[in-house]
Image 1 (cartoon, rainbow over the protein chains, first blue to last red):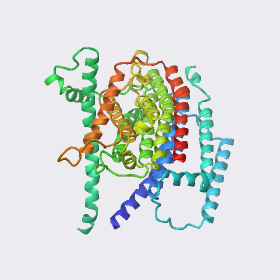
Image 2: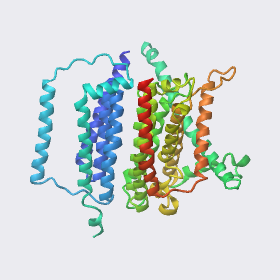
Image 3: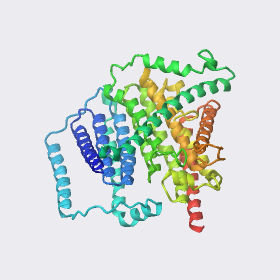
Image 4: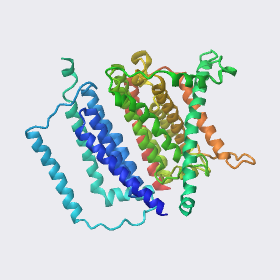
Length: 174
Length: 328
């Protein structure tokens, strides 16, 4: 049985590295398309972490919503606006840097405070019941707020795709 | 030694699953490739492949060897890493759904609680692969093919999911084995004929096959998203397409045609698997049949048909199902 524990541990680190590498690629890549695919890799890593934590339902939903919907939406937006021989415009300067730092700091401290204040209890034995009734009741009563907030993410993805694609292909032609 | 004993059965199981998956994917591509060309020939009153072996039976093996020997051409202005990644991304995930398909009550890789969700999640990667391939080729035909493919796939996923959801409400589970077992007296095709029809239409659109093969319409787009691909990278797309056909037909069999149920054959423990494969290949024959019988639809007709007919009808069907489940 101890072997399974080691395998699970190795998988945890593998998924973690995948998440970080995807995130790094998303931030540092010179091409917009590569950045989006980095995001997809990162989200896959997060799905793997959910799987490792014993929630295959959440892992499947992560892939279905984030990789299947959000990433495809952004990729479609980028496809409209960019060709493969076009590098992304460097916009790490002045006001943008400040705004980016502000956004990162807000996210970091919100999570930091939230994690600091949470009392972590070991996950109970995985609930074997995966019936539709169980999933539906939990999504619509217990985790209603989280469920509704997910739709905000989709809205953000749509707006982001529009902003990225706004330039259009016309500039390339000139 | 003790460690080895504890993990060996599971290890053997994983290896067997992987080997069986590979056998199904490649064997299915060989059989369907040959069957499709032969059937297409006969539908058009010509013999089809005849030269290599008896009635051209090893034609596909020779074709495979030819494709393996061909040069992989990467267009000069293409995005090389993405161009090479796309066929792999289109082909590699097809092994995962095969793990959860219940070929019979004893033959199944893993019985996952969320089997249906796994298959749907993996199917979304295929769309991403087509998008990457179409964009990475840096060619307007490929790009248009990829655009059409994603518009079509995203639209037809909705009626497909809603029609399957009606069955999920009736059985109250996502596990494919339990859904197959739930229809021992009556198949769901009799209880849910509308859902079956909607699923069949959406299935043809999801696999990008004629009459809905707009992403690779050769008269307008050369070959759509795989215009620039040659040799093995092209054949990976084709292998992926045949494997996807097998998967969607398996889902149809599990959800509507009673899974592995059928008259048990004497002296054979796994007769369920024979019935399962017979049903799957009957559906595949149907797919080939309509591909070579009907002309291609226009793109606006395709999208109108989905948004104006399939989605409203599937929603009505779902509503009626929910009311019936509550009442009974």
